[in-house]
Image (cartoon, rainbow, N blue to C red; front, top):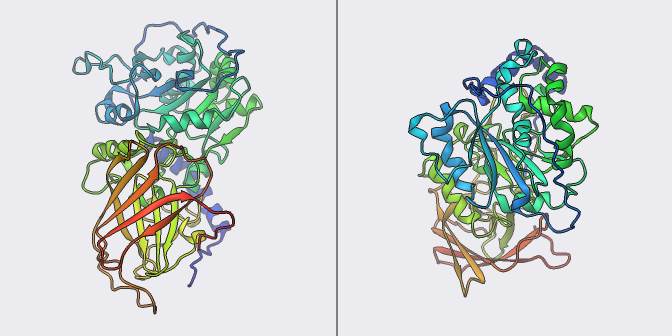
Length: 475
């Protein structure tokens, strides 16, 4: 097998970005942060910060009630983005607010219980530094954590989680991830962008706000009274997440990375990325309006709701890649649970299949490297082009002890079969059925294995997920 390597000089990348950097910064800021009207609140600024002690001395696991969401939107975009938020928001369970730039218009009233409670941001225009800000709109977004903290309803809060209104959360996984950390200490949990250029323009060690990031209560308690001072110190910064990271660095707090948090600074079809998700719980997906629907033959909203059907049953396995082989047929099978199945007409090691297929495009073209991860280029080689199946439906079986997910072929490959001796065509497979354990959550970071139950001539493939045996080689 021939491996393709991009060999352009990093020096060329540096020179180009040095020239284009300022222009790209402005482009990025307005592409992914559409301007909203400035807040119209009459509340006085600066506000009085209420320092209420939320840290419990009782040691028990973090749960959903310990997380306070700080979602930021604007009335101009809420109509189209509301379905993304409502897809994951759990009324009477999740807590927090959607912070807006202006009061909701009449067509948004009465405010539905299926949405996060509405809250108007305080008026950042009254700050002395406001006229000096390079991007004044971001001051409102930056100070939303302060606005949330100052509401005073922080009893039992361990974490403040910041995100945009077009971010989809997988709450069970979020709880699992945050439960690893001591909320009484200062933690800043998030993830950088998938795009090299995005990270270059801002910072490689910054949590991108659209993807979402979490701040422990003790950290917010220290940060909140200093946020206006941060604006004074960094009036030249263009985005709220860059402001936040800079302020936190000045407090001596570094970013803790979680690979399941996704900014999605990508364009087009991101199915290649989701189908080879890293072995970490998927926590967020962002920028749905800038990518194709993640399922075929559905619009963006329908596609998100379809993914949430699997998320409602087992988030621990959602989008987790499992690879196994049908040795009699010489096939490799890659399962992204609850999302897709790929069948290859050749035996390909896991070390290769775990790299995402580059079905997507970068948000801005430039010299390589384009992404913060390795990819596989698309090819017309029938031995290395997968037959692609997407989740059709999901249900529980055997007294709710087994989960069955069924995946339907997207389309014919329109390629000849792989002509390597001993290989067989997979053109006749129309559906793939995957059976998994419904009683045990998948352990984060642990690799699962699977068995292929397929009879030659049948148009349905059955796969059973299982624990890997000690020393089992996935190749």
